[in-house]
Length: 81
Image 1 (cartoon, rainbow, N blue to C red):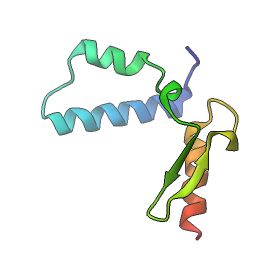
Image 2: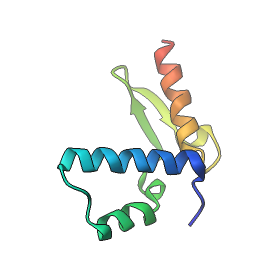
Image 3: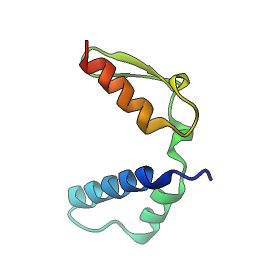
């Protein structure tokens, strides 16, 4: 599996924390392991539309492994409209 880097690991920790808070109990160890081990980027579509104005955000906008920076650019582009 490709390394996600420090920023990605921080994002995963934050998301897992939000899930735990929403559930009101810690996630079971098996679920947490699956959460950390499954490469979610393989399940993402080529294009997504973000914001209320549905601004297109394509995976082609940046090299593979750059999902977080690409999404930030799409959000900034959306905010500037």
